Amino acid sequence: MSDAVSAILWDHRSRDWVFDPGLVMRFINDHRNVDRFETVDRPTAESVAETVTGGTRLPGEDAIRAMFAAGAQPS
Image (cartoon, rainbow, N blue to C red; front, side, top):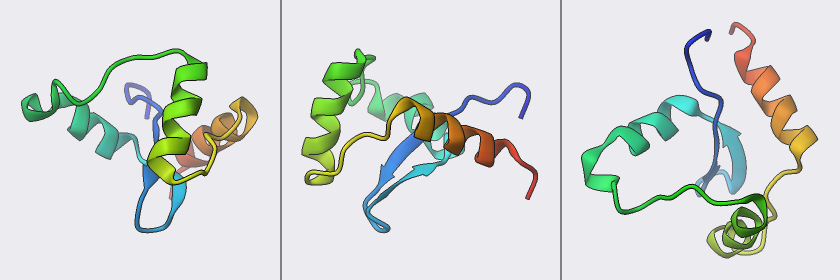
């Protein structure tokens, strides 16, 4: 994953945060979604996350780093 990004997103099916940089990049790189995302600061992301997830908080920095590390491991 040397050139890959690390990214998590809310999975509505599993109702959990998941490491899926491929899906995130497909969404971001799809010209049809250009008006559906923006870069925000952490407090804004936390507020939006609880709205999108129905109350589940955005993982903390340590949890996100752990998800990135686990996702970078070969399967």
